[in-house]
Length: 206
Length: 346
Image (cartoon, rainbow over all chains, first blue to last red; front, side, top):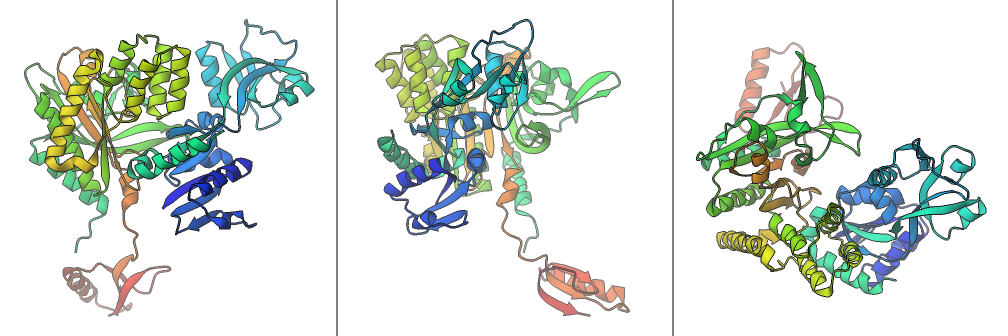
């Protein structure tokens, strides 16, 4: 039985379709219901619908053998898992952005507003810039506009939100996309099955 | 019928295994000076240590046992010590934002470790895993392989080394190739790294020694019958400054994390001033607790006695039941939610 943690939403739907096409179909999941666990004994698969930011936790703790998660959430969670495939979709970039006319005053710590506190700390550590973190949970673009921070450390997709709010990208930190992650112990007991999935999904990827 | 809990049986069997191989039980001091850990931060998995002040000295609750043994075990050249221990260590878990008490049972060999001793330690690791579960895997690597490969390709910057090592640790082929592209590594170089992901050892001058050691070791383990339980896997990586040679992790099915971890760490002992060999491993007992079978009954027999019953009759009856191999719980009425196989009234 392969246990799969699927993120709720578009990403999960896409991943389900990919897995279904390589033999892990479980039609029940397409029905409109509030169920969270779907089993197909014949195909040997169990799917869980999980909050995207929790996928890595389920996989790390062995509740799921495999899962799909954005590289941003994966890096932020610092989960100890294998990352076997870059699925190539959900592409965006983790960036530092600020008001268009922003200039860094290096005589004092940089105030950084972000949802991704671990990633921000790691990045600024690596460039030896002292920062003050402002942890926010959403609409992070507001922070520099209202003077709550100097910059934001956030995901940028098309860049439209930034432009419309008078902000622009100052640094591109790391490219983000959907990744296939695997529990380290499961990998050794389901090696062939997992390698087959990686190979087949690798063919399908964007 | 045994009333022992599964984890206690495992612990007893592990201790017996080590005793019968001539390993001596080593009792650790409860606390160590904080400076021991401060000076060896890289060896530890985390910076957060529980400390307290005692008579002006800053002491720590041990986050690790190996460092204590290396410091205290009166290491002398020419003398080999084989020790095992059972200790609690205290580590900070970033995810739960809490300190955890981790139960470890492990062994260390300090002194002269020839190839046969290296094999003995691995054999003990495999036998330990077998005691825990019949469905287990020991994944083994040699630090010389990755170190040799990095040296062969002249990759010396810590920045790139760490990124490469990280991508191998995560089995992230795609990340590794992106990094190799940044370094303009040619396809021949890429192919060398690629073989790591296939569990094959890239053979170049700098990895030859590690290659021979790893191959010979696996051959010996296979000849002892461990063929289907041992894998060469290069994602098993520890700090290259301390570990030099064999490194390994052990997994059992249905437990998400490694239950066993170890390696050869001459480098660490050398930092304490003595040039000797050192190798060992630890078994993490906490995850094993969850392997236990479901408890269906609180006791086999619920022995109900009336308020005017003679205590010696109650206790004798309880004794009789226990001598026949059943567990028994005495009470004046059925406790709320109590599960039992059968009931007796006195």
